[in-house]
Length: 442
Ligand SMILES: *Cc1c(COP(=O)(O)O)cnc(C)c1O
Ligand code: SF4
Image 1 (tube, rainbow, N blue to C red):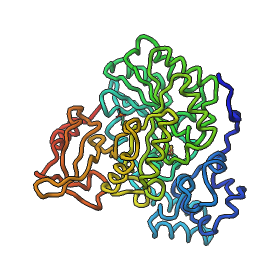
Image 2 (image 1 turned 90 degrees about the horizontal axis):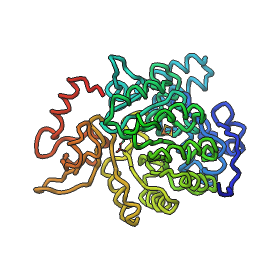
Image 3 (image 1 turned 60 degrees about the vertical axis):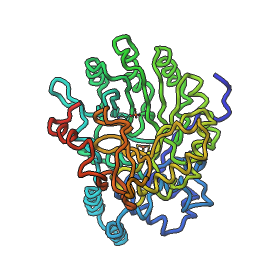
Image 4 (image 1 turned 30 degrees about the horizontal axis):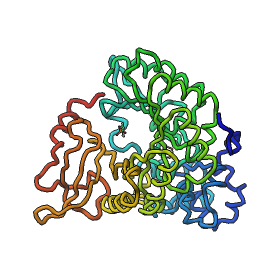
């Protein structure tokens, strides 16, 4: 391996409420900002780490710095009455149990599992539900490995937030690499396996190997593409300087499979350190292909120039821009949400600034119950202003790529707020209802 420019051995040190006060940067913060972090993190998860704090956040720009807002909970993430309720309990020194109960009640109001994730996509094998797997689109199976259900830092806008706050009934994860093999053995239509989380890259390499190695045999040759959804390149690039992990990656490639790192980069500031650039190089040198994706979120990256800078830099570093998502209908959505029309404008104004190499990106896209729906644009048809929509992924693959129309709505932020234009139903609705009635099993 090439000589590395960066110090590759670094001890991972999380920063949470328990030790944040040791940071000199924290001590210099406005007390009101400090209190907001303490209050909101009773309800929503808070974890960052030393790399993020020292190398990604520009403290001269805090509290507006995008990476600060990305990992430190913000006051506006709770409704004012909820914020005040927790703040008042803390100010008067209420017992921990009372604060915990209040926090739990607030969480339950926040749609912890959007888009029918838990109820509708869990595959069944011989009558047994395989928790921790998801099979929504025929060619792709998702696995949430048990030991990967955490992240090197938590994004404040995370749609998987429910699994980080220690409410056991809200967790979904599997420890069973055997379930996965049993399922894939009888589902030869599956070409893509996507490891997701949390962040599967928090798993120790030997644990990850237990999931991967058996799949590299002839029996599983139909699993052509192994994808790893991760934010470790942004939050902890040092994870990729692990020789055993790189050897495993090489083995995947030598077994004739495509190794796709689906890297979550929210903001171009995450691409500027020596560590991330070196990690990208190392990954490419073992034959991995890196594709990038992120939601568009208010306060952090709702700016076309930030996206254009991000996509250009990604391309220059040898990565492939893949998806821009619209923030899901869960958690602190009211703080981060961007109206569909604005998301489309941000997309378009960024897309037009990059060369064709960056126009591999698709979006803005909603991962909604019927599928991934792209807001292709706003048009006027027969004098009526409409959204032009299109499935990028559908529960029925035949829905993909057909333009359809919704009444223009300046405020709408999600598919379920849209009304069909030129008719009383979207073209897929009857068929979807049929599918739901049949049980939507994988
Ligand atoms: C996005 C997604 C996939 C993968 O879709 P691609 O368009 O192939 O990247 C698979 N399963 C689920 C549930 C998804 O949301
Ligand atoms: S990396 Fe992904 S799963 Fe982890 S906190 Fe961020 S959005 Fe959530």
